[in-house]
Length: 146
Image (cartoon, rainbow, N blue to C red; front, side):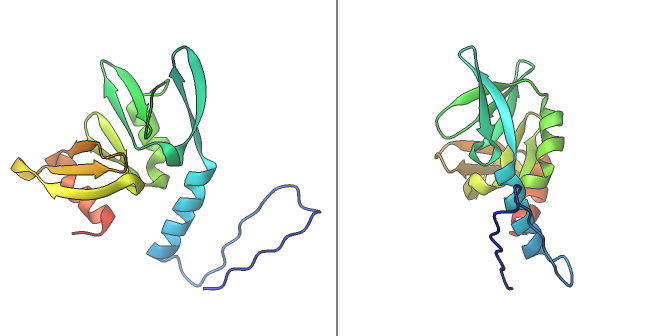
């Protein structure tokens, strides 16, 4: 793989172009990483609206019909429903892990089998989340461990 960077002051916007013989899984991961760095979400905390980089969000879940975004240190309330976030974030390595949660696979540091075919995922902030048995096989496949 060759990487060519052309710096020219006449261009105002950055454009990334990929030329390839076929779209491989490795190339899809690179594209996913590029997309994740370009995406942002908004979340409320203490009456303020914050702009969050998607790459900083570890997971999202729904409690009492409200959707929350969790970063390494903070929790923000999202104005979107969980299924809306799932649609937006599907291309950037967020996957459904239960009826009420999405997880950013880039922040998983370990997986441990739990009872009844569930999986315990340890996140980059050391928080542990449960992946329900309904979604466990999909998550394993997505991570390439099945």
